[in-house]
Length: 145
Image (cartoon, rainbow, N blue to C red; front, top):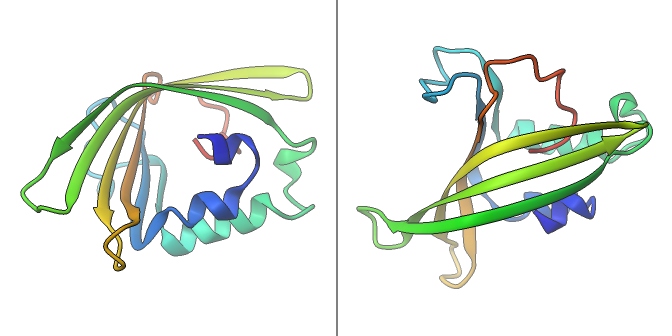
């Protein structure tokens, strides 16, 4: 959350495993992203594209650049069937301010984390962003949620 608020998109991207997914469902129950419309459903290549666009002066949707503040709370960690893979659930509130307009994004995150190849660092395998208003008009979010 802090890396995104500071505009450190490359550092944020480095937290993800090479074979990762970033998913923002457009339905309350999450559904199946291969069969349903999603706000965002990105693999590593799409995430790199998104970060590249956000970091250049031609990101018109980010002129002026948004200011954000993210709050993350109620973090719970769960084990999985695999010894080095954990599931993490947390609640979030993201406030975006841009050009006199303020937007709020609220919901819960689901992360799947695994130990990296070096055995020490953790990597994000999946990040799922579950918005409480995912089935409403979100006005094309131009920030990473």
